[in-house]
Length: 163
Image 1 (tube, rainbow, N blue to C red):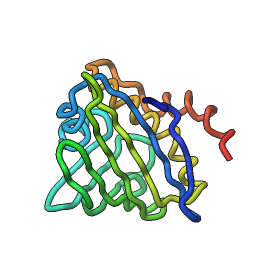
Image 2: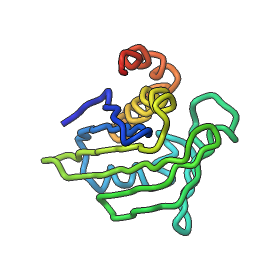
Image 3: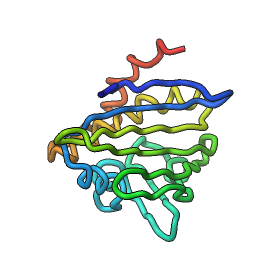
Image 4: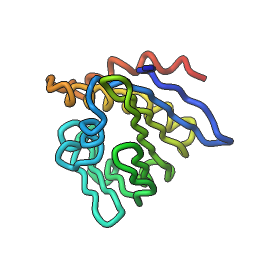
């Protein structure tokens, strides 16, 4: 199952972004790519996981660090299947992201949800999240990573038709 564009649904007034990606890599490798700070730095940006908290500073988008910095408590840590944490970022509402991994033949099915954003902010995050998952897939496949801002610009036209 794969829905590269993801889906946008609503839980009351808050948006729920969902992406499913089938990755042709073992679950342990995908788990490491999303939870190991050194691995995560390669496709997302600087990450610190310490004492039940997470702090991230994405390499992209091109914005001041205080606007990009994300922090939060780790809410679920069930290696190698579930990683959920708060997403606290100055520029958007507090929200929660969840990575669920399931073995899928010789690969892994990643289900990612980001819930708690406003509709407007979620619509803005959709192509950016897609671009980061394209970078994750390239990282796992040992391929050159797409430039996030270029990929965002390529993807953004696919998203505005959503209502």
